[in-house]
Image 1 (cartoon, one colour):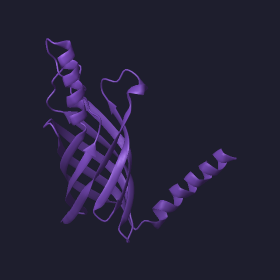
Image 2 (cartoon, one colour; image 1 turned 90 degrees about the vertical axis):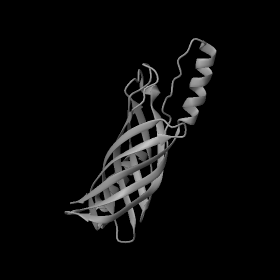
Image 3 (cartoon, one colour; image 1 turned 180 degrees about the vertical axis):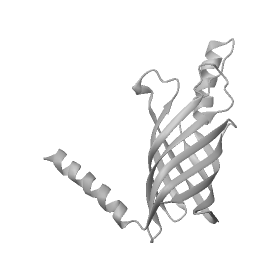
Image 4 (tube, helix red, strand yellow; image 1 turned 45 degrees about the vertical axis):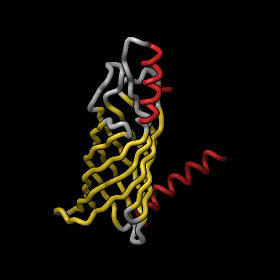
Length: 177
């Protein structure tokens, strides 16, 4: 009975959300992120969003983040992130699963969370352009290699912890359908 109720709720939710929204469409973003220790990343994102007149919006997105400066051959180069986004006017909160290209098991999956401001004041063709600035917490790896194994291990742990917090900025484009 629980599965039936949950399935019915998801079905009704997926039908009524588009009907109640006054605007929906694709959002594209290209940007950069820098961690607390100065490690740079390049980001691309695409998502589908529903917006209402009262300022709320809901959507889902997929984000790819490339590690520009690789300090070790074992360090992941590409991170894939995906999940729901909830927002009000210019503020948003997003989170979901984080995968990377050097995963050996599904157990290597971790989670990320993003929060920030999205300003979309410019009319570009049929859509709206804007700037996105935010803060991201994502456990990306930063490995240190050296002659001293203990020092390299401790350095890798400390730099990985400091590499979790990232500040990002990007250019966005919302294309309504």
